[in-house]
Structures are given as C-alpha cells and as structure tokens.
Image 1 (spheres, rainbow, N blue to C red):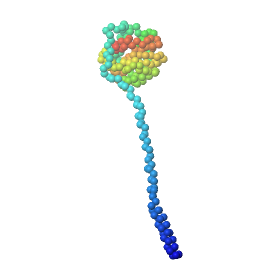
Image 2: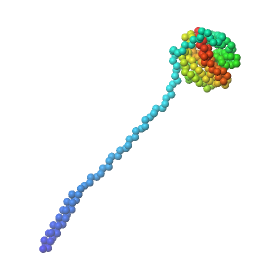
Image 3: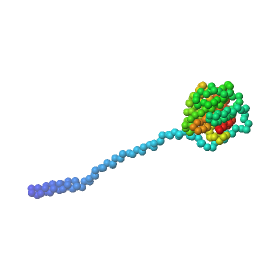
Image 4: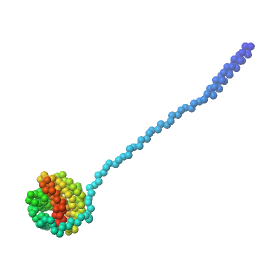
Length: 223
C-alpha cells in the first residue's frame, strides 16, 4: 500500500513538473520593441537676397539730340564775343557788360552780365578727363568755388550750329559769393578741353528765363 502511494506521489510530481515546463514553453514571447530611428529635422535656409547694387552714373549718348539753331532775328540787340584761344564765338545782349570780377579761378574764361549782376553768361574751361555725367558736372562746380551742386534736368545731347556735339542741362549751386544760383549750361568738348557756356541768374533777384538763355546758347559757334 505504501509502495503504491509512493508511485502515485512520484507520478503526480512528474506530471506537475511537466505541466510547468509546458506552460513555460507555451507562454507567448513579446519581441523587444525597437525604438524608431531618430531623425534630425532638416531646416531649409531662408533665401538670401543679394544686396542692392547702385547703378553706375549714366553717360548720355554722344550723337543725335536737339539742334541748336538761333532764330533768324534774335529777341535782343546783340554783341558778339570771339575767343581765339579756344576757337568759339557767341552773341549776348548788347547792354550786358564784361565782368572780369567774376573770373575768380584759372578755369574762368570770360563773363558778361547786366550791370546789376544778374542775369549773365560765364564761360569756363575744364580738362575733359571723364565722360560727361551728373557726377562729373557736380565735381566740376567745386573747381570754380561753387557748393551744393545739383543737376536739375536730364543731360540732353545737342548739336551746335557749326555741327559740334554738346550737352545741355540746368544746374543749381551756391556761388562762391554765397548766392543760390541757377544756370542753363552747354558743355562742348574741344580736344582735351571741355568748354562750358552757362547763362545764369540768382532767382532771388531775377527769375530763371529758359527761353532767353537757350536763345543765347544757340548762338555758340566753333571755328
């Protein structure tokens, strides 16, 4: 009887061990969780805007333009000035007087005006060391003692009555005597020189008369 009990006990123990083993084998296994790959966010650099560029000063064309032709009958009684050194002549109102007191630098050639100062005409010579441009014009004003120059209009190519090419424009500046002056200018290159004919006024005393000033400049003639 005891022997049978032991057999049963051993059998039950074996069955219990086998059951635990089977349970362990049958338990589902959970695969290890692999974390997703870490991605570094990519950033798109903002578009770069190129720095603004300043266009170079515009040089006016060298051909064509307005023909300067004096009227058959001038609106004023004229006197004629002729310069043999630079080879030009022009006509101006006969009641204007020569003004050597206005020739304050070696660049000045000749000047005439009404006896009360304005309006008048002054002729100036410069070295033609750069193309005609607003920057060059403003720098030239400093050579004759002017300050705060402003080119007030376009620089227009013109042809004088003898066929020379020139440039016409309005110029504002403070004169060497301290007045706010305004002039209508005609620049003509002759060899290595640039000759400026400027009919000017001080608007505080005498209005700017473009019609008269252009009529005077239309009489400029080179030999």
